[in-house]
Amino acid sequence: MIPKIQGGEIIVILVVILLLFGARKLPELARSLGSSAREFRKGIEEGRTEEQDEAAPTTTISDSSTTTSGTET
Image 1 (tube, one colour):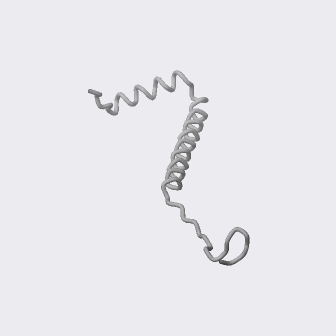
Image 2 (cartoon, rainbow, N blue to C red):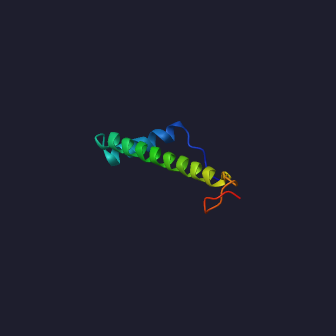
Image 3 (cartoon, rainbow, N blue to C red):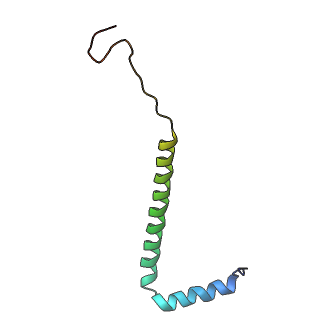
């Protein structure tokens, strides 16, 4: 079972991250993480629209009054 993370533990984790990456790298890291998440959501949305397009039935309009030779029957 996964234990719940409380406020004090989050602060310790943030301090460790600050020590590992430094204050200068954190904004760059946050920007890249945000753009990665944005691209991921965009890809998921594109996948959903493709699935919906494939699932939608296609209808064709045919003109039965003419034949392939161009003469009416």
